[in-house]
Length: 114
Image 1 (tube, helix red, strand yellow):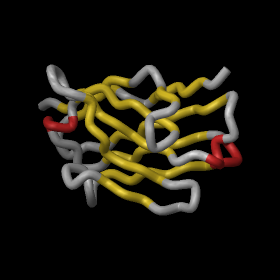
Image 2 (cartoon, rainbow, N blue to C red):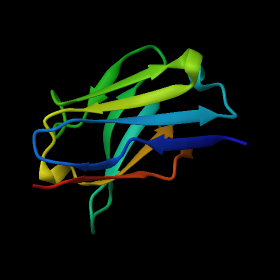
Image 3 (spheres, one colour):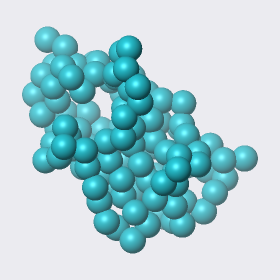
Image 4 (cartoon, helix red, strand yellow):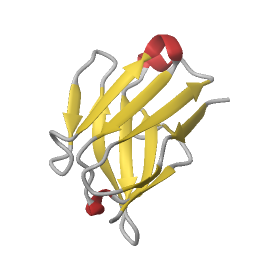
């Protein structure tokens, strides 16, 4: 059974940092691209970052230069380092495997507010 479990969400003030983690089990993580998505209140789920199995990264313009996606295949862990947080970064963050969103976590809430 494939499981993705996000953690690390919470509350932050503008300008602060948070680090999200995604613990993966039941699948050969190294063979899949890792992705992060965000769903802001009342909006659709949006893609924000991808890290391919070959190490190539891509970011949405809204987070480029502030967020960093990473993975540790040996530990079956994915991460999203979020710096210089803004109120518009508020939302539920999901990790996913596969370009088509083959597998999803349950999400972790991030709230950025002063």
